[in-house]
Length: 180
Ligand code: 5GP
Image (cartoon, rainbow, N blue to C red; front, side, top):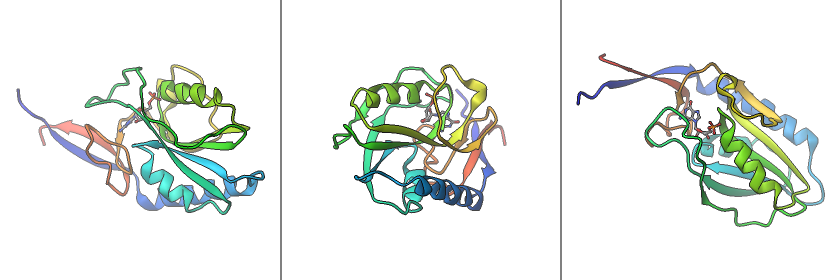
């Protein structure tokens, strides 16, 4: 089988992403938190860069925690099947929780996350996603903060992968396959 070359074209450059994250960070900060620190949930692995940058824009007490879910493996299509690969190490009952996700595409992953976290009795549950791809929506999920609404394109970089590659790119790009 012939392998095709892959190309990454810049879609959102690093400065554009950083500016938007500063705006969202200010919005979240302005709402403040209750008596206890805001629980900020990093959804591994895709949101790791966004989470790290957003967390540094939050000027309020936080607890930073990690949750692992399976995503697409070696494909640019959602399988629809979601699996928990790493659970939180903190009890979120009665806590104010912010889920930080890289991208909401069909919405299936976020819907699953909201179901399992809601069942744990948090005081509040908000969702912050860097990217939203409404063209492929299959379920409605409430999104409190959206960095960018994007076209129906497959993006990589800034935490997002294709077959576990490209996560370390400092910008968000689109993946193109071709002979050259
Ligand atoms: P959903 O369940 O909303 O269809 O997809 C959520 C997950 O699929 C994301 O957390 C991400 O891991 C993956 N995903 C969806 N769209 C893209 C995309 O354009 N690029 C990459 N790299 N991953 C995506």
